[in-house]
Image (cartoon, rainbow, N blue to C red; front, top):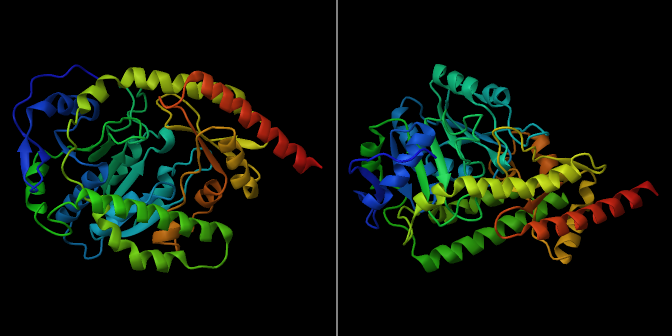
Length: 400
């Protein structure tokens, strides 16, 4: 990050009473983010989702000519973006992903656009990135707001050769572990220097005038997690259960999870941003151990490419025998290693009419391995040995 310059007192965070206020302790972080993205304003929030929701509200306020606006989202991500979009009054559309990158190709997103499309969210997922110059120009030409989500791919500007985060009208950052940055909270970067004033009015309109109490948020988060995992289980098993109708019937009960406007106590984004170069180097060193050993292994397809302008959230690959994903993942966990299988395609919950076969195939076969500070280099090497052992055993059995 470029060294911060003196910055005047401007509104940059939300109080517990939904009032905008200045905060000298955040000036350094604001200047860092403005330098990184080219934004004119930054609003710090309790979580990234709250910033995304406000961005989508701002976009809709400027496009009142569209009664039911549409937004285009990637078909592989967590459900937060779609939940925020529905809260803000959008119809959600989903663009399928490229099977090599797990990201939508810009052309795929453009093909979904129609006369009611007013926003597009591009999530640089898993640390993989796409240069968005042409997509940004197309969005501007078609009066479509572009939102970039960097929660998995933020990196020092010296490594950001694809200029991720510099094209969006709005750019989302998260400081909530287990993302790239940690410490809690989120940030919304805006190119419109009048956006802060418009946000002040939105803060007193629905859906929420106050954030949910911590105890309620904890209960809602646990309930949503259990609900999501159970519905994924039904969808994965192919038992015919209509997860879309069930989910959309109960989804609104969890809207309070999206709305956490006030930053946490001790919020220090400048500290996280200042350590980004070291954070990036540690992640990349661990991820390269996996990549060098696994990229040509029979039986798996590596998603994490570590190309120029990319970072690594978790090292991700797909096993080619998708029906063995659960068994394979459990064997790694039983060997003592962190494993996740994120993400399930959100179109399955929010709009199954948008068929996304590539996202569906990836979701049924993906494995994510930790490369953050929760694991040491020695643990990464031990996990690699476990992966190689179980991939070889899986391939050996299939050859019989």
